Image (cartoon, rainbow, N blue to C red; front, side, top):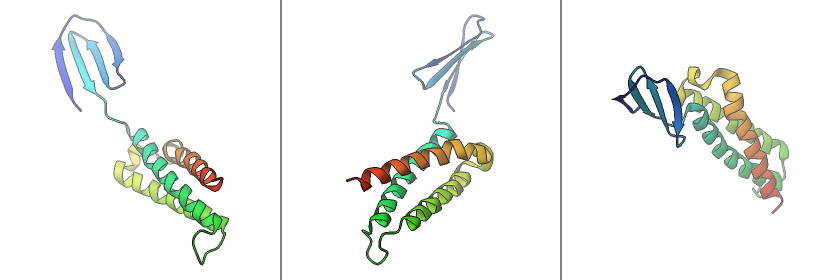
Length: 128
C-alpha cells in the first residue's frame, strides 16, 4: 500500500477522495493511502465473469445446441454449480480463507453475484 506522511496541524478527520485515496489528518501528520480493490470486490468480479460463462454453457446445454446431449436443463444447472464450486475453491486459494470470510463472505461476495449474473445471462440467451 502506498503511504505518504506530511506535517500539518493537530486535527482528526478522515475523508475519502475520488473513491481511491484516503486522507487522514491526526496528531500533526497527513497520512495519504491509495486504496486498491478489496478482496470482496475481486471475488465478486471473478464470480460475475464465471457467471457469464456458466450462463452461456447453461444456454447451450438447455437448448440442445451441443450434439449428442440434447435438451438437458438438469445438466445445465449441474455444470453451473460445478463452476461455482470451482470459483469458490480458486478464490480461497488466491486470497486465503481468512480474507474470504468463510461461508458468509463467500455467500455475499461470490454466490450472490454468480447466481444473478448466471440467471440473467441464461435467460437473455434463451430468449434470443
